[in-house]
Structure formats: structure tokens, C-alpha cells
Length: 238
Image 1 (spheres, one colour):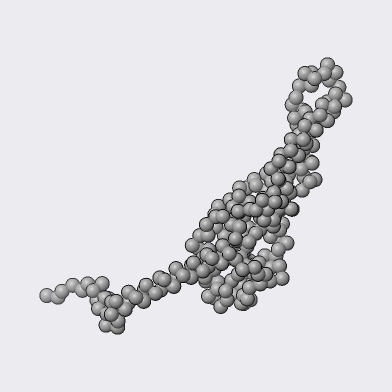
Image 2 (cartoon, helix red, strand yellow):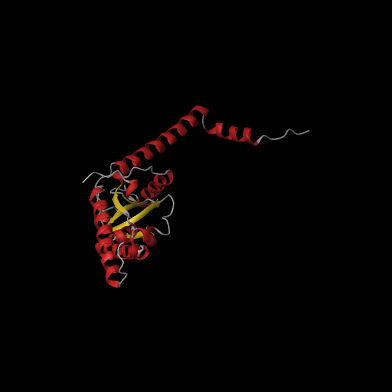
């Protein structure tokens, strides 16, 4: 007796009572266009950031666990051999989530963010010749606000693997230990009939010079430097 109700048809009729279909379509097109324009502007700000050390954040809306001082950022970069540079040097792609996070922050804080920086391994930057990005915006007075993090986490052994490059002292200690291990596994009788302690240390001295020469050649040839020198350098061979 009663015809079934098509909810979609009813919904369409309710909509059409208030506006024409063409008008609704135009409004949606405007929304999408404004959204794309907003994304393009943010992308441009990330690729060509305006140099700034301050953003007008609303202090009441900031999350404490997202605020970091430059000294803390520097320390993590040195420990894990990362760089902290302007986003204009970043050669990776900014995920949509990062753009949305920026738009949300700008809306909530009623401001236009600028001066973006990224913490990431050197391979993710387009460095000038001389596994995990974190996007920051400056707050002021050497404080930065973590906007977004993406990608995979760092390898659990990365800190240990880059430890020799943290400082000159660490590198020398590595050379000393590595030279000793190489000398210990080498059969002493190949080089001398006198297998005394003096012969061992003499061989160790030559092995040490060999290992040190290789390390120095590798460092100079590839323009490598210590973590403390490169963490905020835009140069490949700084």
C-alpha cells in the first residue's frame, strides 16, 4: 500500500528546496579550489620559507611536549648524525598530513607560520657543496614547535654506529681498538720468529698507522666531518 522511501531522493529534495543544483556545485568547486590553493601556498612556504625566528603562536594552545629548545635539537642531531636545516633544502615530499597539520595550527592560532625547519638524515637534504623527518616552526628565543613527524623510526643501532663520528676523541678511540683487534688476530709468526710482547706492540704500531691512514684518507676524500660540525650545516662537505 505504501511506497518505500528512498532516503537519497528525499535528501536531494531537501537540498534542492534551499538552492539550485548548479549553485551547490559551484559552492563545492569553490571549496575545493580554496583547499587546493591553501595546500599550494603552504607547499610554497615549505619549499621557499621566509627566514624567521619567530611565529605568533597562542601560548594557551601550545602543547608542552611539542616544544624543544635548540640545545636539545642540537644534541639529538649530534648523537644520531642528523641535520637541522631550512625546509628549502629538503628533497623529500611533504605528506598531506603535514600540510593539514600546518593549516590546523594556522587556523587555531590565527597566524601564518613561517621559518620552517626539518630534522632528518643528510641523505634527505639537497645539500650545497662546500630514515625520518621532523618538521619544526620557530617560536622565538631559540625554541621550536614540533609541527609534524612522518616516515619510519631511526634504526635502534644508529646512535652506536655513528658514535665514532661524534668527535675526534671517539674516532681516535675507535682506531686504537680496531688496530688492537686486527693485530690480535694476525699470526705474529708470519712477520717475525720472536713472538715477544715487543714484537706484538711493534706490529700494532704499524697496523695503527695503516688504519689511521685509511680513516684520514676516507675522511678527506669524501669530505666527511664530525657530527658537532654538520648538524646545522647546509654544505655536503662541511
